[in-house]
Image (cartoon, rainbow, N blue to C red; front, top):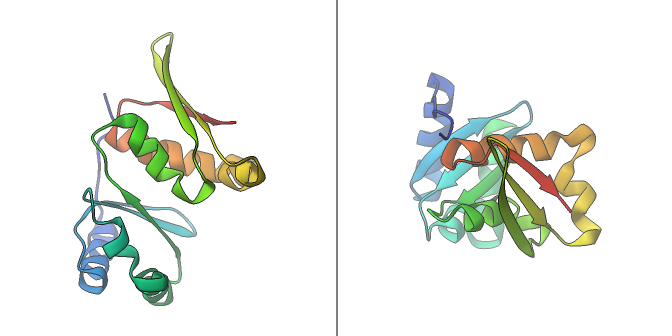
Length: 142
């Protein structure tokens, strides 16, 4: 079962600000120390980012946090690709490992380190956002 989505007062405020600035519908917002991850309805990724990223830049200026926009997909494979969009995802393999569903994503080799992040931070954030929407408990990048 995917993780329950719990929206705090802060994340609800971020969603409200996000929707005012972008005119896109956010269906989820996950806050980390330095980043806000917004999941938007299918087909609204470009609307949310804005021309030349201007919506994301305005949101970063207002919140003081980096902004990541992920377009929702009912297809788990596509959703994982969308989460790793900026790292040039090439393929996703989803498999059962015991009682855990695991996704292995292949990204542009030059961007693999950034996809994983310092001490695996980006990978953990990606796993958490994927797990909130799909039955995938672990991720790895190759």
